[in-house]
Image (cartoon, helix red, strand yellow):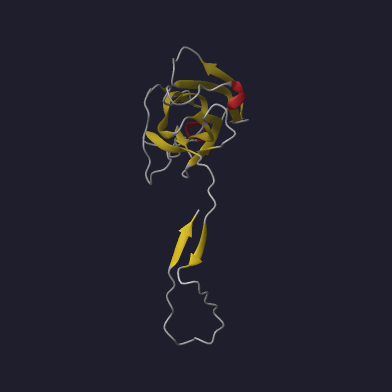
Length: 194
């Protein structure tokens, strides 16, 4: 499993009463694409755990879940994980692929840089071959240019809007009317005021 986080900065809207910025985290899964049979390339059962900083991000609720892969008839929350973790088990279905979207959730975090990842807890293919690695693979992406175990997202507070205007320092304005083609470009110094 791997988590996909926004590459762009996330801004906290001025209207946010809780001082948190919202963004989507998508969890994708890669199946064993080199399997000898179709059954070996399919995943029938899986369990993952989304991990995040509990002190800066809100816990995941049912209302925050925006997508569960419909190829699986049954999804159940993994209980007893503690603060900073949320898990799901899925079964009664099957998928195969290099980047299958499995689950998406809206996270809400305070201002700052937050490392979020996903732990592969258990999985089984259609042949009944299973594994329980309980590890965060370097398969998550966010602000960086590489896959990492925990990808980063930057949440920023929104600043107050300040009006800014520019004017020429010497009061002149230059309009390009093509009469100066071939001439050196004039320079213009401006000042910014708010």
